[in-house]
Image 1 (cartoon, rainbow over the protein chains, first blue to last red):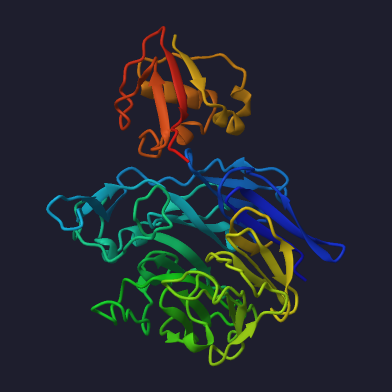
Image 2 (image 1 turned 45 degrees about the vertical axis):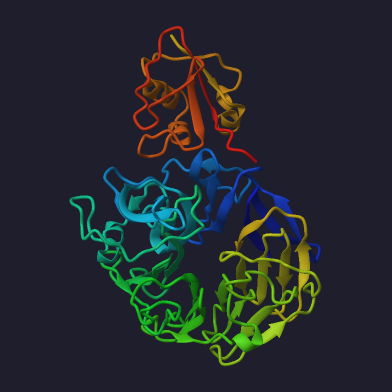
Amino acid sequence: MATRILLGTRKGAFIVEKQNGSWKPRLAGHAGGGVNYVARDPHTGKLWALLGFGHWGAKLSVSTDDGETWKDNPAQIKYPEGARYIGQDMYEDASDENGVGMRIVTRPAAVQKLWIIGFGPGGAVYVGTIPGGLFVSLDGGNSFELNRPLWNHESRGGDLFTGEGKGETKWFGTPAAEGGEFAPGIHSIVVDPRNPKRVFVAVSTAGVIETEDGGETWQPRNKGMRLDHTPEADAEWGHDTHYIELCEGEPDHIWQQNHVGIYYSNDGAKSWRKVSRPEQGVHFGFPITADAKDGRTAWVVPGKSDQQRMTVNGALFVARTKDGGETWEQMRRGLPQEQAYDVVYRHALANKEGTVAFGSTTGNLYVSEDGGESWTTAANNLPPIYSVRFA
Amino acid sequence: MPSIHLTRHLYAFFPHLEGQHIVVEAKTAGDVVAALERLAPGIGFYICDERGRLRTHVNMFVGKQMIRDRKGLTDVVAADDEVHILQALSGG
């Protein structure tokens, strides 16, 4: 049974434990500092925290004593000398009617944000960053290297270490970048439990990308996803995937919350099918979590729409499907139904063994121990919550 | 040799520097960061990014003058200079 939840918040890492029948949060490190993500590596037992200090940059922090003490990991995430990427720059342009021009520029890369950490067997650790580099460790986090085949992917303009490449990128930016620069970010990392050489990442804004050979080659996996708001609706790239998660027990079942709705794949991301139901209020949102056993079961916390990124009519609910997205149930029992405007970020919903938990930017943490049927409020006054993960 | 004064923020990450009178061998702003890194491994990556640029929201003063070369840190530091490293006040 799940008894421990790790939280990343705007003002520190928290550990939430079940004691005497109720969930109790406590500050567990990095007081006052931004913590984008906290997770436990099930293979090594280390806890990892991805820190975003406003002034001092992104840092990778590790605990080898279950969160009692933390230290900066001796190997930090750093882009290697010569790493560059193609981006778009806004600039003042007096001749433009809005006073703003856009130009394509090739920039040297530096870490703006550590956004997600994922784990594989044998000491594999993956860190997804803004501006879009995937860093890989094969020794439990003692050293990290930029995955160059993905960084140099033709969709990003090719190899800019050795030349100018194609001069064009199909990866666009995310406002989640800190420091105001509009650059792409890797926010999802999924390792196939049957075959650790098979890894999916998802990028804002590019879509889902897969390797089947341990990161030597990467292919887009965006078939069936639509960009109805753009001139090229069936484009291979440019998809605004918000988060993906797979079913551990049935790993060909992969779930995706996208900017344009919810997608589901039951063929290992070879194709996606849109399964959101706007008429039921189940469409827009950021997080999604997949059941570990049943590939047809998943949960989301919907927001109203792209234009109103807030709860639907001021009432908070979780939606669950058990049939691959054919139908969704709205589950509200125990959640606030009046004047509730909780916003739930992409990493702030998780499930384990029937327990489901999510946290909001208003500092509320909700836990259900019956698969989402009923909810208790575990905390009301935490800092804005960025990530919720079971230990 | 120049004396270095750090914002209290940095002591939270490098507590063994607190209360020390830090004096280093340095002829440029870059030398100061390199010397601090030897005193407190890791601190250089708090002050500068991996390209060696002063972080956007960090300031470095030599005397009363904010350094000019934030990319290369070539500003000259004299033996009797006081160097201050602090977070930029970016409003809010």
